[in-house]
Image 1 (cartoon, one colour):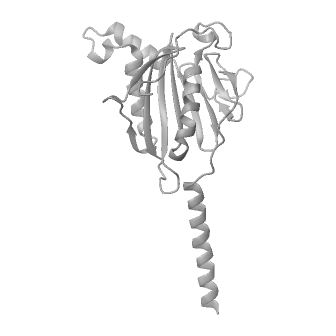
Image 2 (cartoon, helix red, strand yellow):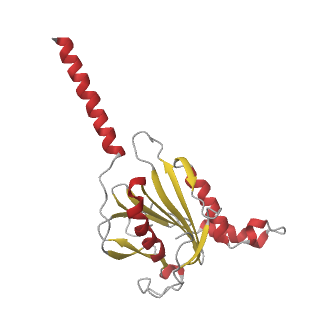
Image 3 (cartoon, helix red, strand yellow):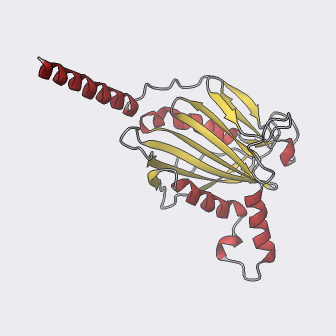
Length: 239
């Protein structure tokens, strides 16, 4: 009798683990957002339109006595999410300053530096992002993985990618965008991702957010909710 009980317990454990794993690999569909609101970064460096139904957290340097996570060189970041769907926006002063210093001090300018700074910075941030995933692969369209477009920030670069999380056997494969913007003395990096199964519904949402990002007062723009922040919005290459 004890052997049957042990076998039943083992069966329940295996079934429970299997069911839990299946749930992780097949998350419930995320509702497609129907309304958006403007979010202004804590350091006032940008505006962005975010779905009303999404959660958000940020790490802007605080002046109320709380310990600041951000620094002057790296003002902070904001995360917007609904379940496994998320968008991270990072703001960096140091990267832009380094890029400009290289241009000003180098007697022999590397070929990569003859391009606008956003190209070099997009490549550098791509190298950093690779380390966060397994099997990171950039999607090529017309033989290119980097696609430039005109955003409210000015000239910007977008790369579409697919990847697995480090614990790939417990989580679904991912599909996303990474976008680099340069406005004034700031670099902005936006990383959007969702489970592969959500991509068809979510990539238009990501594109709305990507196109909505606009400079804020700290980046030299008027405090007008991003409405007059310049830059003609054009479709992405390949759409």
